[in-house]
Amino acid sequence: MIVTVTLNPAVDHTLAIPDLPEDGEIARTDDARVDPGGKGINVSKYLVELDTETTATGITGDFLGQFVRDSLTEKGIDSDFVDIEGRTRLNTTILTADSEYKINHDGPAVNGHAIETLLETIERNDPDTVVVGGSLPPGLGPDAIDRIARAGDWQTAVDVGGDVLRDLDASYTLCKPNREELAVATDCSIDSLEDCYDAVERLQTMGYDRVVASLGADGAIMATPDGLLHAAALETTVVDTVGAGDSLLAGVLAALERGATDEEALRSGVAVAAQVVSVPGTTVPPLDDVPTRLGSVPVSSPEPFSQ
Ligand SMILES: O=P(O)(O)OC[C@@]1(O)O[C@H](CO)[C@@H](O)[C@@H]1O
Image (cartoon, rainbow, N blue to C red; front, side, top):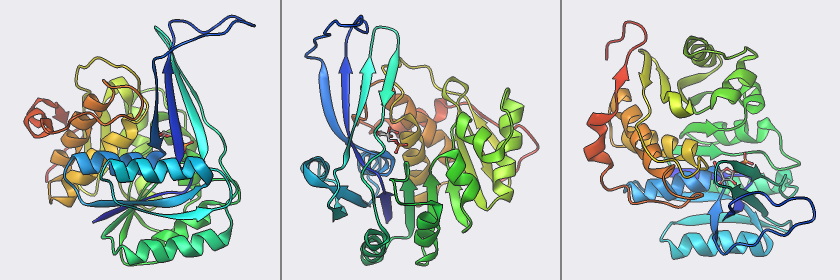
């Protein structure tokens, strides 16, 4: 069972307008939606659609936190959050005809007491895998994630910022950086696919058994204990890229949880992400045809690879 931890959840407000307004103008639209979000929560949303057992945990507060909890319950997603006094954030995505703008709040301050309660919450749900996803709220540092990783005999995967990836000390089963996070985590400039291969291998030496890098139109890379894999992106109509990395991670974890090989897991992640970018915000599209699309994900081994 996979428990996801979102230390800084969000209500995702996604709205579409043809163009950004000029200074002093008001843009009006009725093309808008709100979804419960934050990276770990999104992973749980996609895992449920992939028939994988999961509980979403994390730290929520006030009426926006209540919205997150209620919406997950309405969607049939098990959740078990620690409630604090601060207010869960509202993050905004503005889609225009040809651009995507994302504005994220810092989130409410969280103290060590909330982490103690969160550790009890995770333990009570008895996971085999814990996924920690998203930014750290004010008041918490990377050591909060290390504490979660060390608190039980579960394996821990992370989808966190590059600076946090660089600073984590515990052992992790997997991390999922994007291109920018790879550069920050390894302190290297990333200008080519070869640079990405070097960076994911460097991250492995920093304590991550598997590194899954999401590279947008360049597909995804997986560094495994046996070598490197590259999957090309599937052709799809992109509405927006919000949640793309979360869905890639969910696809990979759902497959690994079923006992799939690393190559099958990478195919699964890429096939799920292709579906998710074709819908607005962090909406969950139907994912039941993912198994039939796995064969169409081109996977190659950038270096001699045998599994
Ligand atoms: O500010 P963070 O925690 O890094 O990212 C939060 C967020 O942008 O990530 C998700 C998409 O990946 C959204 O649901 C959410 O708004």
